[in-house]
Image (tube, rainbow, N blue to C red; front, side):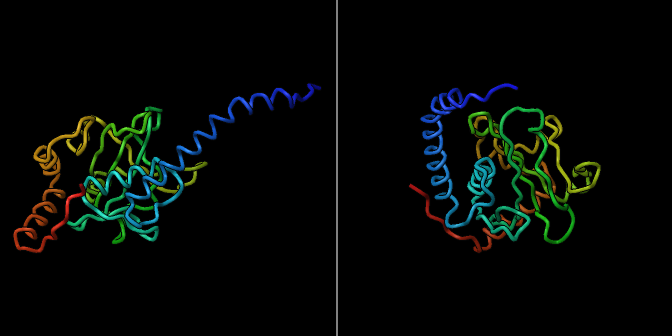
Length: 210
């Protein structure tokens, strides 16, 4: 029987100790900073990749985060209910979302925002999809666990979904972003409705953050 060597383990743990203390402090500071941008809303779960996706998404579209009771993560001034799915890194599964409980029903989101971060948490690209169009195209696939149907997933197809990019590796201009959005009939209809509301004087003036 191989004898345990607690001394060797103590030395290894001590070697990592200071680094983990620094990592814990950095993670605490990151959480505090992200929470500041949540503007009083409690971030779902306990996972900074997901938090970043939600905060980045609501910032990109000027939206507001919502509570856990909703199927979506933030709402926009135009009335979009957006579900955010965020992936980090370039591992085998980065193009597939986390499980989606259901894709049908009145409480489902109007849009899916797919956020991809690189290995250093910087934004690689962000895609925006009309939920209804994904349903019609049968893009939600059954996700099985041990052979049993548990939920659904969406899998990104980079070439096919290129027109849905709303934030590439280097940020595009507002004009180009609008053109990307208008490539989708569903998005185009909602954008035009939002513009009509602004033209009718029903928009809200917002102060710029210095």
